[in-house]
Image (cartoon, rainbow, N blue to C red; front, top):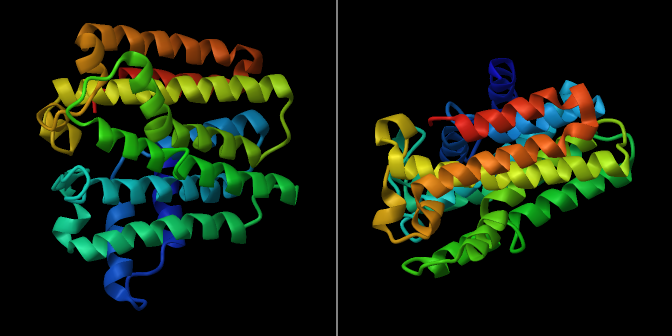
Length: 289
């Protein structure tokens, strides 16, 4: 994990526009948003999925950077006063606090478009059709049928109790879609996989995506601001529907472990090539921050 995280910090630093190039304030803020923090779970998943298909690390770091830039943009926009209104992210002031709201809005826009630029200008697959599918996959994961759509459902659901199926529908889009894209885009950088292998990866990604959100809800409920690097307890104070509010802390812990089991079962057909994906499922469910 440490090696991939360090490699991704270096790759993101190289792929982002330098801070001294005009418009300098925007580029500086983009780097502030994307560098120097975060667990890099999505790039870790891309690299682990790339091990299944024998993908070259040079391809994986670009594909993973594209996914991580989408994630970084979403955090910048999520923290804005018109969204979740949070002043802390990754242990430092949110972008709109450190800079201003208008700059934060542009930072998110610019990070998102840079993600697709990276997927378009680097050769990441041997077959151009596969690379076009990667672009489509990330666009769907980020758009109205993925992350943005999930955020809209989240905004509309504030102050309302959601049943477990409704909550899962929201988070399949808001959180799960981009995690699924991280896995499938990483795998696409290597040799073509068989239908059964692809299905296994897809099932794994969906289980891990939901598990990530379940644990996030638990950490917001049980963790501290100092540990999380963001404001703890914010979801309950804002009346956000969470897995803890829907099924209780004990139920959420049990669900996370159940999803971990589903993720492991989905990898059985992939054998030892999926060992790192299995370890990451454990990390997602057992993490404390």
